[in-house]
View: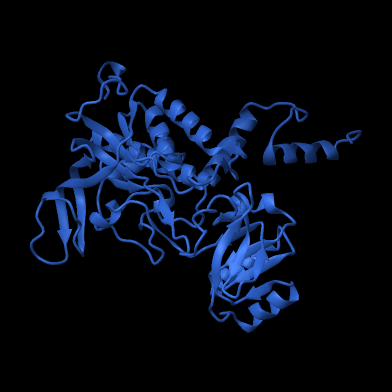
Length: 408
């Protein structure tokens, strides 16, 4: 990496014989953000994108700072162009079928764990040192890398009701922050029961007073407090099974037809019936998942079960799954991968690396040290108290001014 301070370009002719610094599986906001960070660090990165996206049905994206209301396809096209402007980053429109891990060291609760090529992580097994990864793509080729980031996303489980898939993205949604605002003051529906239905209905009151909760043939599952809140805020509860969703002449959701033939007019319907991993790779690799099915990882995306493997975006455990949070996770994970690569290139273990290479992931200087340094610098480089400052320094300077005669 350090020879002559230069790196060969990557986004020309791709060859499967090369060893990449990192392969990113998934070309959505998380994967592209990770590739962007790594590209700016001049790492050789190969992104594989199958083209499948969780919000594929959405024509317009919201809740994205600087891109609120943008066309989804144009947003991703622009993101790809920005990432591929870095010569060491390449993108291939291929699905990844399998990933093999060439393990250097393996820990196993039971006897029999040996280094070698692992396609599936067994129960109780942990790969503590990885020599390389072999990524298999749908065209039969193999690609090798030092690190791998899975940014494969999730797929929402759409209720199996006639018309729901038709109006998915045209009035039927899962994310209130992403899509509820456009229906302010209009009739809104919440699909589900128990916490997943009742709490969505409560949140909808932020946008409309005309809210209906559909339990689809089930008796309402709610506490006495929740029932009282539903009644107090005028949220209608319909337990009759849903026959189908119907739409307008323009192709948007118009309402739900119940099993008894009644039509309930709606402008939108939100549900939260769960999600699954979009890719089979986490399951094939035996990666641990939490109760919601998200891949278990550390804050910066590293999967403890396999050294050198990282996850980012909606496939990983996260409190909120939005485009912006996925992109943020991708950036954090990209920085972590770059730091790990640098530790290894300098011959440092992780503890030594985290002690000496701190600038890549932010300063680890304590707030007390920073404050001391700032005050010492202020005494050495004394400036007029009328000079504009920010934060605490500005407040202190203003307090000094106020104490001076004639200062307003």
